[in-house]
Amino acid sequence: MPRETRPEDSAGADDCKGQADFRSEADGGVLDAGDVKRIAGSGRLASQLDHVRTARWGAFDGDRLRLAASVPGRAPGDGTAIRAAPDGGCCVAHGGAVRVYNWMLDERRPVSLDHSQVNDAAYLDAGTLLIAARERLGKCDGGMAAFSAVSGELRHRFRVAHDRQVKSFTAGALAFDQDSSLFASCKGRLNEYGIGVWDRATGEQADFFYEPPGCALGDADKLQWLDATNALMVATLFPKADNCFIGLLDFRAKDVAWSWSDAGAAASLDDKRVLHAIAMEDERSVCVINQYDDLGFLDLRSGAGGVRWSSRSKLMNRKVPGEESCYPKLATHGGQLFSSMNDSISVFSGPEYVLTSTLRRSHGGAICDFAIGGDRLFALHNEENVFDVWETPPPPII
Image (cartoon, rainbow, N blue to C red; front, top):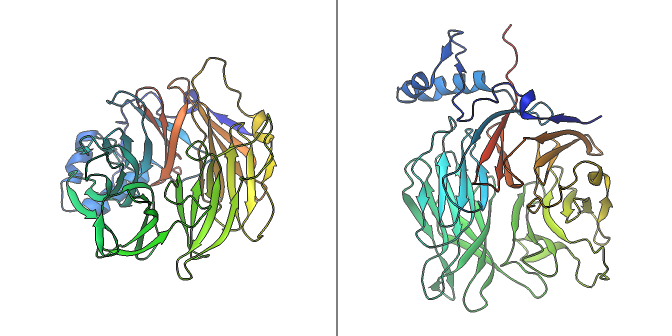
């Protein structure tokens, strides 16, 4: 039977500002926020903070998560995205700004892009944020840049050149591999659509995969690097595109090694539209979710075949009439599959991905995005950009 976690079940859930006690492994005592900040300013920063973080929360386990904090946002309107930092911090993108929080959930100096719309953000490492932005009509802004996650200062702006001429562009989805490359979906002014590639060390453009007919690469909603396959998964989904496209790009052969599209599928009243997609950790399949919260799987080992849908998600969470909803999102971590649906996140485990837990809080509205990283899960709600922080309790001290 799946377990549902609510705030009242969570240790430390009353602490809305994320300033719960920090237990030191060294002395067994309790550190207040001032103690932690003094440690952060000392020369023993790395080792001391590792001890504090280890005492604060344990290794990530989707079936043991507890609500640790809820942080209200300061910006009007809905948030665009939330991203998890590898050290336990996070950032929230909305409009032309990205608000950054350290692992103690103290807000750092935000990254401001003036009037450019932020399309995506990603942590290259704990101290570096990649931000993709939309180009404004008649302006030479937009594109992709790296910023300091600590100071908010611009570190590098990534350029795109076509026929040896630098061009302005809109950057959409972001991704990077484990070694040397950064990727972004790109839209130029003269049909210069495709996936840009930059060298991680130099920041210079290394390649550009131009959009072939029938493959909407420049409008991609999701990019994901697959290490074992040595390919980039690209997904362009509804409602950005009328027809959903998911493909694997082989940059060595400059070829689409595998693809799937719902173009040409028979339309019906119960037509299933793919709203999000993620490659599973074994890289054998892609999980997708539709507007009915059904999960489906595409076999990456087969050159043909459609989505194998499962309707089990319909039994988990029903939308309350009149309640605002958000498009569902997917994530994987540690062999588990996570799916946001309305105001909750469902956790699926095991080889058959059986529902084992549900994370839900009593207020905040629908979840518009969530992210996993630094052994935490961050869930962004659509009401005032409030986000929740879920943690696995640390193991007992014996």
